[in-house]
Length: 335
Image (cartoon, rainbow, N blue to C red):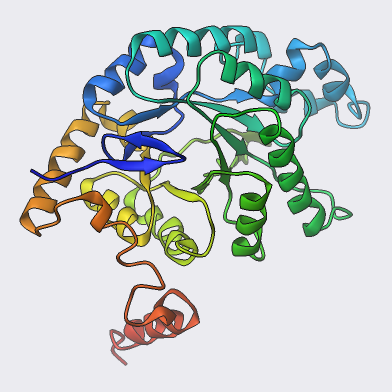
């Protein structure tokens, strides 16, 4: 029988499939169904920075600042009393979940600044969470803000939170950095125990008839696996943190690729939302069958077996592969 156990941020997990933050974890029943389906850990639905600010009565100034010029700007923000669950309810849910499930529970904070994050990171720890994920959803729009300032903000946020909590800390990043390996190293030095690659920005759409900017959530597909796969493979062994691959995990082969690239765990959300949490059990069954067929006795033997430092030609993860792809397509064109 194959051994599916793995380790992530110091947590021993029964298998490498983790349920990332989604609406399923907004209620205890949803988390129980995830556990029954076999996932090894759950990242709770995110507590947003805007909710923390709203709770402390600081959001009013933030929303109204500058609205004299842009009256419609208020509509860009959700109605907080109706959105998600408030900070206190979030903490109560974590405590309730911890009392009713056996798998590790990872809290999630979503935002861009320290603000109330440090305080709520401590309270999430006190509520019983086994770990914490900082989902830094930041889109710089000010031309005066430099890339160095943005990255320094990430590092300082991690350092501030880590100084106040003892539970392991992961940082969920976007792929939009000039030198991702350098930032990853700095985050590790600041205290991050894990990196989650990548945060999937949800792009707004334009309604050309009403002239409105409208939200448009599109679930991921397996093709989106390639971007995090590449960077997981590059970072494996170069940074002293555990790695989680997120985005594009829809079937067992996606989990296998994630592990071979160097991820400690593969996180999935879209597949469970599209086809139900029972898909997790099917994916794990398929994973075991594949490992048995190809004689992999354990997940540990798979992790990193195809990272950049392990493959015969490391340049395939860099510019050389770009040229090979273009040449392979050229050969298909009939002139």
